[in-house]
Amino acid sequence: MDRFYECFGGMADPRADNCQHDLLEILFIALLASLCGARSCSDMAEFGRAKEPLLRSLLSLAHGIPSHDTFSRVFRLLDPKAFEAAFRSFTAAFAQGTRITKPKGVVAIDGKALRGAYERGQSHMPRVMVSAWGATTRMTLASTIAPGGNEAEAALQLVGLLQLKGCVVTADALHCHRAMGQAIRERGGDYVLALKSNQPALLRDAEAALAAAEPTAQPASTTERRHDRDEIRTARVAPAGLMALRHDFAGLAAVARVESRRGAEPPVVRSFLLSKPWSADRLLQIVRAHWGIENRLHWSLDVTLDEDLARNRKDNGPANLAVLRRLALNIAAAHPDTKTSLRRKFLRAGWDDSFLFDLIRHMR
Image (tube, rainbow, N blue to C red):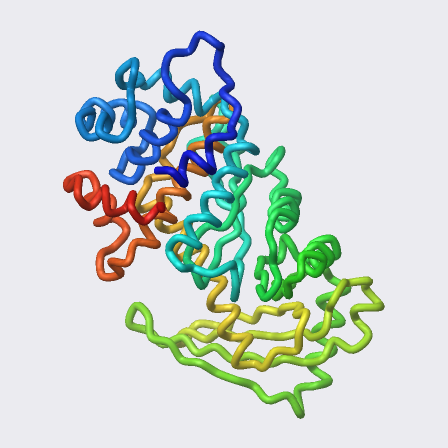
């Protein structure tokens, strides 16, 4: 509780001076409600009424439980940049409290459409939330709404917020450009960036470098059985030569190819730009770790927290509530009970006050 107040206490209250409910109490109730499965501002208000005796043991609640309109108004008006900054501060402090060291290993960057967060008649233009996800800690490190739907710009903003020394940043082909490579290197990180035909000159030179090195390059393979079928992945790494100078791509040291085969299906071939000449074995580990942002973060947001169904669409509401959902996932994922799924942790927190208190204690 003290850590929550320390990290979120500096936020400016966007409401009028005569507002009744304390901002930090509103945010804390919203977080607890999210940990118990709340999906909307109406759910948060209902949670507050149902758990009022419990909440009064933690909070003063001088004016009772906030209404759903109050929750909605706060999240609509709250500065999303300030809220996200408080989220990052809390995540860093929370990681230290749970003895998770600073970010290391793979940091995956990817965007996710908030499919319900669109204005009436504009379902083809949902807002996009871009997140940086730590594959080692399995926590969201930072996130931001894409300004004007510009996911590439949002990803650059995220990189600028993170200390990446000792980290390997992975991203899809949308983010394979000079500015991203430069930004990652300036923050002390390395990169593995997917390369596709959106960068035809780079792709052509990468394929030529791989073809030239193929007779001597030592490939590495892994076999994984999922959904009753085997997937074989084979990787090759080759020096980039003069590509970094030719394309003015900061830190470019090697190129790579990963070929995936699933049964009788045609192979899928992907190319990558690397800032270090990692071994083919290490490259396979890095590329595989990247997909955790899809399989663990995005999947959990949709299946466990119904993010795709969320219809908060006004003002700053979609961005702030998306950050709140990621904060709740961080707390649940960091709980030491590794045998219980995230879904059951949220259910149990709603059923069992002692377990909810246990989640809160891990916030210290």
